[in-house]
Length: 208
Ligand code: GRF
Image (tube, rainbow, N blue to C red; front, side, top):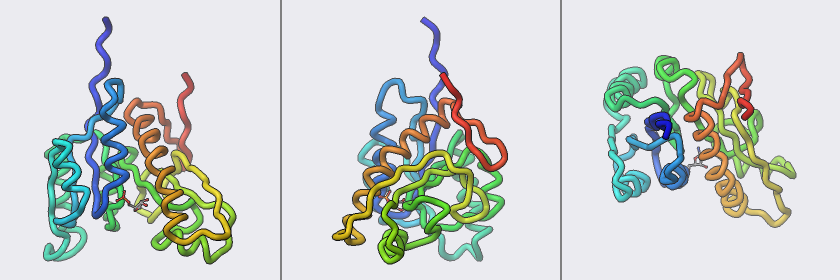
């Protein structure tokens, strides 16, 4: 029997609840999944996602973002933690930090983010509130490679959901989140299985 390729080592960066991280952990439990999550890192000590990761038996790390004398110094320390863990891929999943260009270039083509809107619409925060206020009929989520421009890297995949007239921020967020969990696992699996080709600002999926 041919040996299957080694699973890619993935680190997930979170700041809070960690439901996307949980969806990725769940997907990684499939025996044929091309990645394993070997580290969950947070800048927030009591992030719920850190507890979930520990319960799942995954190594966790925490470093408070305050008191390092600036973003660059902090990111360098986080980089060292990630490098020490010998990761292949870094996944931002509700990591509420803007990362430095040095951080981005260390993981170029190997760092993903999920954004709760159909980019390039509604970059930044409060996406569900802004979607409702703008009256769009469709909203959704996007998985993209991380570049130094916020929420603007090459798009890997998106999912759209309808916006209903009786929607609240919460009901809309819930509908979007369900799709986030699905497309994030799919995109990470494609990256880990080397099925994505990045050319200029576009992502192509290998056939087969
Ligand atoms: C998600 O909506 C994600 O798209 C955004 O922050 C939220 C994090 O949720 N970046 P969770 O921590 O994954 O539950």
